[in-house]
Each structure stands twice: as C-alpha cells, then as structure tokens.
Length: 399
Image 1 (tube, rainbow, N blue to C red):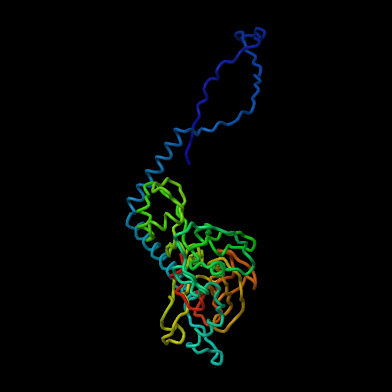
Image 2: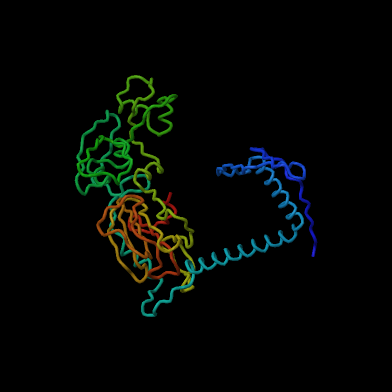
C-alpha cells in the first residue's frame, strides 16, 4: 500500500462582500470575512476537430515510412507470396481456357450407325441445295450465251435508249436483249454500285454499242486513254464525235469496246462477301481436302468452318433472299440464301434458325445462332459458297 499525503494550501482569498466584527471578549477582537458563492453559467460549444492538412500530411508521411520499413524488412516473404499468387491465378486461368476449349471445340459427336451418311455423298447433298444460275457471264463480264450476235461498229456516234426494268429481269438478260456482249457496259453507263439492288420500275440507259464511260482527269490525253484501254484513236473520235484532240478535265467520254477491270466488276456484281461472324472466332477447317475430324478418313470439305461459342449470332454474308431453312443429319439446322448472279450460300450447324423462308435479308442481317447440330464436333459455323452451281472457296470471295 502506498501512502499519499496531501498538503492543503491556504485557500486563496475571494472577493469579500461583507465584514462582521464580533463583540469584544477577553480575547482580541475577531474579524471574519463573509463569502458568498459565485455563480457562473456555462454553454455547450461545438468540439473542434483538430485535423488539418498539415496533420494529414504528417500522418500520411508517417504511414508511408512505416509501410516502406515493413516492405524492406519483409521483401523476401512478400515476393514469394506474390509469385505463388500469380502462379495460382495463371493455373486457374489456363485450366478455364482448356476446359472451354474442350467443351466448345472438341469431343466427337457420337452418331447412330444408321444415321451416318457416306462422306463421299456430302458434295452431292450440297449440290441439291444449289439453285439454278441467273447470270451467265464469265469473270470479265462477257455473256456466255449470245444469240444473234452481230458485229458492232465503232465508226458511228454512240446512241442511247431508255429501258424500264421489269420483274424477273437480270443484268445479263437486259444486255442480251439489246445486243450487248458485256454486262459492264450497263453497269458503267448507269453507274450501278451493286446489280443486286436493281428493282422493277428502275430506268436504265442502254447504249448502242459495248463500252464504258470515262471521266477525263488532269493530265489525260487521247493517246494516254487509247493506250490504257487498247482502243483505236479514230474509233474514239468517231464514237464521241470529237473534232479536236484537246480534252478538258471532267469531260465524259465513251470508250468503245472497253470493259471494267475484274476487281471493279466483282464489286459491282456484289461478289465480295462479308465474314458471317462479327464476334471473336477462329478458323478451323478450310475449304478443300482434309482428314475428317470424326471418321478420320480423307474427305473434301465443301466450305470453311468458323469456331465460336454456342449462341454467337450468324450474319448474312451478302444481301439476298432466304430460299431454304431446315434440318439435316449432316448440316443440322441450316439456312440457304440466294444472292442472285448465280451465288448461293449455306450456313450450317445452327443451334437456332432466326430467318424464315422467303425473307429478304440485307448484308449483316442476323439469320441464326451458332451451334453444333448435325455432323459436328463442336460449336461452329459451316459456311459454303456456290457460284453457277459449282463450289467456290469462300476465302476467295470474303472481304
């Protein structure tokens, strides 16, 4: 036990409000001071926070110093912990990707023996889907079948007549009707961006001879134009009724006997298709000979495969009319689109068909969802292209 002693000091004097003197006695007179209690009033005040910017910066600096000291003293332990954590995260991510790969793109689909089709008959099956060609032209736009062909004369001025497109007309049919031999003539003269967009009621200018129009550019001359297109100078002068060899920028000439280049013609014919999957995908089986992934024998792959997860939207590669929708043991759920000019495309193994038969679709229209129906090893789109009833490598027409 600890003894604590207190020393009471003499109380300080307080204000005196009165003084009393007692009567005299045998002792000395005693005088006492009278004190009255002093009353004070107190009011509650808001407690002020002692935090300031200076104190915050000081505390922050102190915390950073402690953190740096902790890290420097435990750098080895922290490094090992981070490496182990990164390794575990990487393993988990790799495991997820491997699982996704095997779920989506592998694992042969077992088919009943009675439902297996001979792989050699796949081409014949696809040929049954292809429709009759509408445009009979070669790669340069020349008509393959020209009736009553006459020799065109390039010694007279070119003349034009108007024609109103009728239902069922084709660009090759119109050209043949007026004795033209190359469809690029009508495309060039009428500045047709896509022949697939021709509609009944549209009016076309039909020239009397084959050729294309050309707008003179700065630096052009008659000799340079003749060299470029391989025509004769006198024919160029006669057809355009030119009396002078002087050309002006912006002048429009008709180049007799000339044709559009192959690339421009393909673009105008709408032969450049868009990839039918806009989401992330990977090419798996290309067009041509391959080892069948299920049967393990050499076969001919009629299209190209785009592997992606089930439910990925499938888009029309080119505008056209949906001619067929259905289900087949080989192609599963499929859609066929006729694009005109002899082109048809097949979209197979869909999990769901969205387009309907007879529907007109534009390029990029959603027609179905990716799946693994039919003769398939996993979710993917099988894309086939036909031109004039013959298979075409899709990679040659995709842009």
